Length: 333
Image (cartoon, rainbow, N blue to C red; front, side):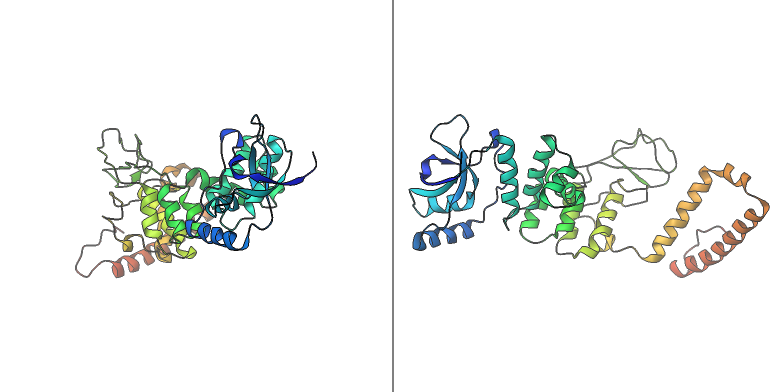
């Protein structure tokens, strides 16, 4: 059926039903909507919306493009609006709506992600969706992750411009529920929720008492409020570590939430801390792989010995500078 423009009564124009799934684009700014309604009331309805015949409902039409203008027209008191009628099947209509929504400045990241997720669920790969919309697979996957993972608090803060888009995407990777990580009584490392064995010292954690330590995504939201992108990855990493979700187990304070822990507790880790952490990881590796040293040649062993002596020398200096005067040094070298 060729395209045709007609005046359609608003009572016969229904929202995009999407076979019962509805429209991904759900957020319409009330004030902007009222401003548009005032403009329509004084200057008339400009252009036309796009609809298709509503499947199974003769005489009714399903909105493909123009949801905001249709709502504003109703607020302005219009009885009918001009519409371009297209006869599209379900799949073509879904692609049409997705592409149309992407052109809207108020299309939110999680709404966009819902549109992409819908196409993936319908059988398209992430790469195919990305090619169709002219974006990279990483971009599409990131928006889908926001759709599936970003909680209500993160979304509200993003709408208030308290969070950057990068923060929102990284937050989506954190669990959005209360968690109870396990702190090892022997080495004080924080292990993931439900751990039965300490990942650092292999201690039995099955009888260790745990308690709710808050929602990691909500906690991270509080610390990310107003932060620029440069600080985001480090804060996310610290929150992960405090819930036993980091790449490797570390010693952290339990009860990690925005009430109990100050912002200074997750300040950006210094370069020295990073290097010391790497050194500790190297020691842990050799403790677990002591047999590897037996395979070294004499020259390789001497080289390792020289490096160890240099490390011990500098560790003495660092510990002496870091530990308050008069306090006992724990480093037994």
